[in-house]
Image (cartoon, rainbow, N blue to C red; front, side):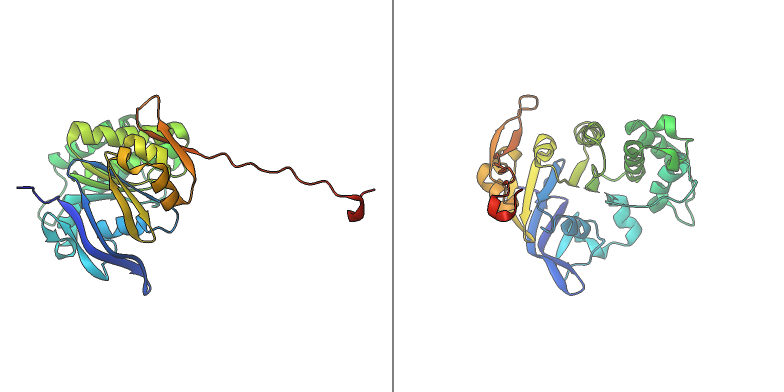
Length: 277
């Protein structure tokens, strides 16, 4: 008997202002996986993630979390089960790193349960896992882009959820910091058993880190499975409109996308009839 995954979508339709972006989509997120959603701009991948995170109410279908429709949970209970690192967010001016990370404990607070040793330990562990403990007393405004992203991730980890959703966590980061963030996500899955779901733009990075890849186009899933089965020249061209070769990455052994060379003709020189002097 196969157990149902903790997070899944059944015939889910999502959109904005009456315009449907994702239409009757089915998705199962394997437990303990690093699932990465890829697709061209406008394919619906971030919309899908927002639906999985309970930020968008489905127009049809449902998102299931632990066997229940996710919108049937009270907000704080849902936030104790699933965490989200949004694409963009703003921190209050002048806030210290440790105070921002502590906000991740909000779902665990109530009138009868205020700050506790368990909260203290959760924040300490989140700072340690993201290698930001040395920044605890620093002002968030003074950090670099890479440091800020790790602090946001620490805040999400402080929620202590087993499922973590990340919307383009490497945006605006240089290559080194992109790898730092994705290395951390991979370690969380392997060492702590987290189920990670991320939206990424870089297909080769997605193939390197994902254990389960979901390729989207036009609000639908084109293919889903291990990167070795999904990153093929045919699927890449179908999803991205990009003719390419797929070779083996010599470092990771994962699929590496090499776009076909595009010959750019040099600008033509004006002829006498076009007024050349």
